[in-house]
Image 1 (cartoon, helix red, strand yellow):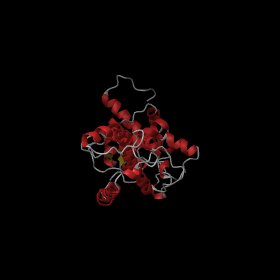
Image 2 (cartoon, rainbow, N blue to C red; image 1 turned 90 degrees about the vertical axis):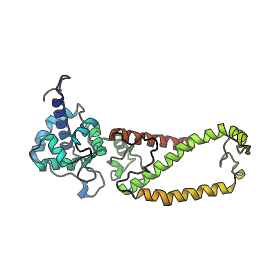
Image 3 (tube, helix red, strand yellow; image 1 turned 60 degrees about the horizontal axis):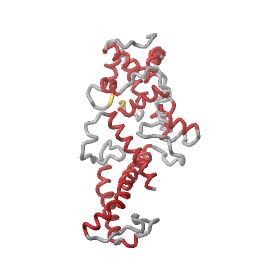
Image 4 (cartoon, one colour; image 1 turned 120 degrees about the horizontal axis):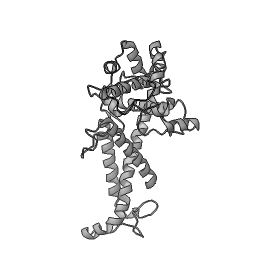
Length: 304
């Protein structure tokens, strides 16, 4: 179309235009393959002439940001959390399965044959911010400043909270990246507990010790015992031994079994007693994951 759709457009017309925008986003993405992966994982093959002919129209629509979480739900008719070949073919009404397969390959970052929601979210970012670095502005800046190697798995990935921060180049591949993310989430959770527990101990300790008739272990000035504050010598060594033993048991016996679960995301321990995560949409889950990550990073800085 030569002009944006009016606000009075019929619902089915808007849906068709959104599908056209999706087609343009997939077909026009020249930098979809993750940097640093093997050539077999890259999706830089030649695009068919039929797809090239469609680029100009959809790109106009793409500027109007039609890719939305709702569109993903509409295409994902089996509610599997992924868009497969048949769903995309039925949605965009292509006559050639080869063309649809080419689109799937361009959007399929990890090469599993489907487009999951993180990959679709990447498409939405590319729609707004451009194809470079998978539409990630922070990664693009890190690359431009030389703070991130172009071969890093962070250069183009769908991991939530990716700011392109790896100046030492520690992550060499996606497996190592998942390991570092697991450690980051774990330390972030501990830091969030500590950020609450540290001041709470200083504030509430006098009341608990008085009620229980226990000795007050706070050091001068009502501060919690620590390496800097002193006072650790007043705590029973058996307490520290118990903490270490319990931590080792949880880490080796419990968490290692959890980590063997298929398709497990880093940091997913299956712990959600209040049901804050269960039953949420893919968009809401990604938002909750990002909030936990950012609050954990802030807590690690604060508690340090």
